Amino acid sequence: MQMIVSLIRLQKDKVKDNKLQDLLVTIQNRISAMSHLHELLFKQENATHIDTYEYFDLMIDGIRDSYHHDLKIELNIKAKLKMEEAIYCGLILNELITNSFKYAFPEKNGTIEVSLKKERMLLKILIEAKGSIVPFKYLESLIWSDNFISDSTLRTLLYRLRAKVEYRLIETIPTIGCRLTPAL
Picture 1: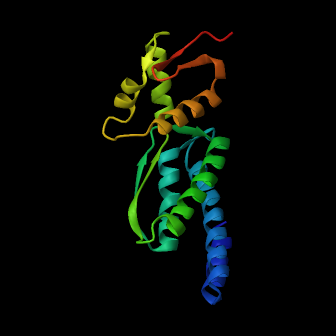
Picture 2: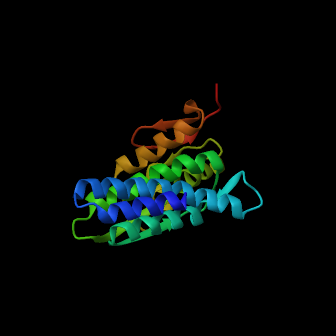
Picture 3: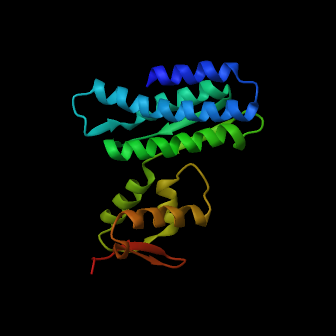
């Protein structure tokens, strides 16, 4: 795969059209994302899970080198992904980071936070509450202790978590809080 990336890079350097150069960089980064995953899988003994932090860090460094931006990227990864999950997460993250480099920061500096732990933290809090209602403000203070968040951020987190577990398992009480309920 590295050979393919190198060939694309060589071709990109010869192209004068900016749109075509951008397309070649995007293709190069997508192939590199897959290449990094394969590289990490070959290095480790257990090929079922991947060190997500290392994978995302390698991939983001490659994207950063492609765009020559001074964006700060904070990785807050405390999870290992199954290989098939890592493939999809890597491709999605590649697209999100690439689009951030291209469009989100016209000044070419800023900060992007990548996190995979908030859903897990929310579920842990709800499990520890043992069916009691957990107020939204309390959840916000535990999960985002150092940042102010909008109501839609917490709703999005709840929605994502509900999509991963049995939907009826998490009951939301409007303006009050939420709790785990026995699945019917």
